Length: 351
Image 1: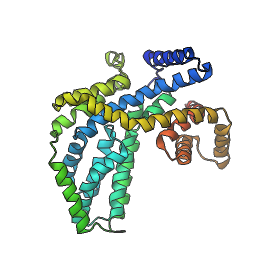
Image 2: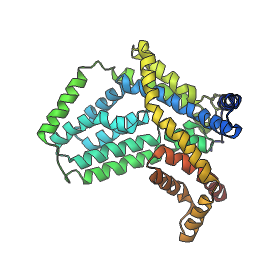
Image 3: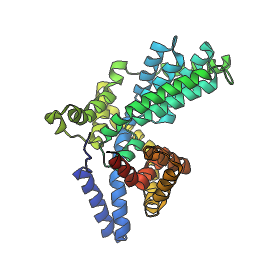
Image 4: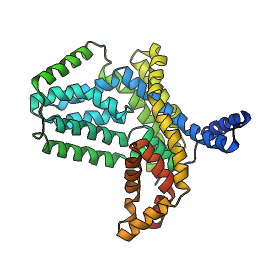
């Protein structure tokens, strides 16, 4: 079992400095302290944007997707498409972007193999969600911060659920492959044209494309591996995602021979994180309001009355909050902020 790690000292200092600066600007101290705490966590999300920008803008994500589908699509088309979307999402690419990357390939494969659009869409979206569970994205970062855990611990814990998510996606999509509207020849030709235009772009080789995610995973997993196998040297080697993810992105760019594009790709990744950051800040305010209420106590009481195991509190709270806000990131923040103590209490009680 991994021990709960406190927020790194530099994270606390960053939040503290922001709060002090706001107070000196004559902003209400309460709001200053609140914003300092939120923005200290937001910086970690922006760090993930650096790796995401590198993977998307350099073409590394598309290289990985094409390699997976090329190896498997003749015999296991739906699995190949779901797995490709899962993997490129798992390395930090956002789900909508991952779907757009794989979609042209999916339409071409669907037309050739006779797979419906419904099954293709389910394969891509389900694969993306499975990858999202184990990727260094705002959702896992929010969950890690909410329960004061290392990001790598959350990613490891999500591996088995991600595999089950992939399996269920493939099974259900396979059952629906003959249901609904099929991909027409014109749509496949248009998709092929789009893919051909993409192929004119210079993409990195697969070996170079996986450098950035491989570096990130290796560095983030050093401490958890040490804890699992009781290797004190590795356990003492603590690295934070706040600087690991940007370092991995830069190393990946150097490996791909595109180090001169560091600023451009980093700026692109940070720009794509802007909306998420604003959501996180807003969600933090709402989480404080909900946490001050007795909503969590009411939900726990309802679960007890219905005879549902307390183990289901975590997924139920996540589903409720995400459905209410139409955002997985916001839902994660609200669920951890509102139900975190109740979930932790149930876990301790079971031990």
